[in-house]
Image (spheres, protein in one colour):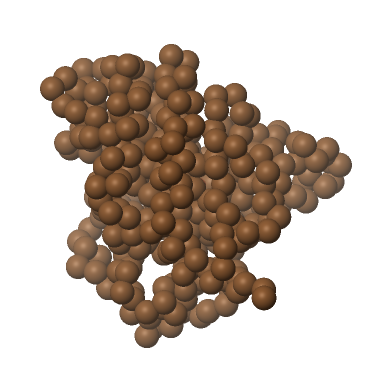
Length: 340
Ligand SMILES: O=C(O)CCC(=O)C(=O)O
Ligand SMILES: [Fe+2]
């Protein structure tokens, strides 16, 4: 029997005012200031709240929300203690770099504010060579590979998509972002990095710890799936015109791409221009939450300005339906130099 596949985001449903996910007390508060990678504040008019969804929302509404908005942020998917175990394991493994504040533990993950943040960047930005071996180790660890297979997470993937069986890409990523450092992730949609496969996956983004809205979590460009798809079509047309070899076309780092494969690192100027004036949606994430987003949804991480000095740690992982045409380059755990 063929498994049911979600309709493409934003094409299958018109906005339906009866959707029950819509309101939250925080949406009446102004969102906190966000910084671009250059350190300036983003115009507050361009920032609003992401909409949370509770687990007991009817499944049809959850699916409609994902299809219409390109994301669904589900609360309490994974037990908090499992998430904090992963946080502890990560900071334990990379603590030889000395980034933790003295007298605090790896489960807390507090940055030593006496250090230079730019010397302690994580994956997605430019980590120092000395930490690379530890990053290889944690990504290959049983604890992290088990996390990618967390039964509660996978259960939600199947519920959301209707797939009978899902395949998780072993190349999940753990990205830390210390207060004051560059954002690990510039503006992008995920298909840009997974071009060798079909845009038929679902990304699960999980904060590994609590992460306040000014703590460097993901921010999503509202209603941006069509725009993401259009931008990719433009790239494809250019590549076609130039008869670019396939290996270059599937690279997120070919000559048409920006720094580190991203569309831009300036969340304000880009959103006002190429982003068509759309707003960034931000959130107070808690350990256990998962945001599922579409391959075309445009997003970036904010700069971490956490007032408690917490290091933002998050993981992104991707699921296809079993048997789908997936990007084989992502089927091995991350290692330094894998070129992706
Ligand atoms: O955690 C990040 O900074 C980036 C994650 C991301 O881009 C994703 O989950 O697709
Ligand atoms: Fe992404």
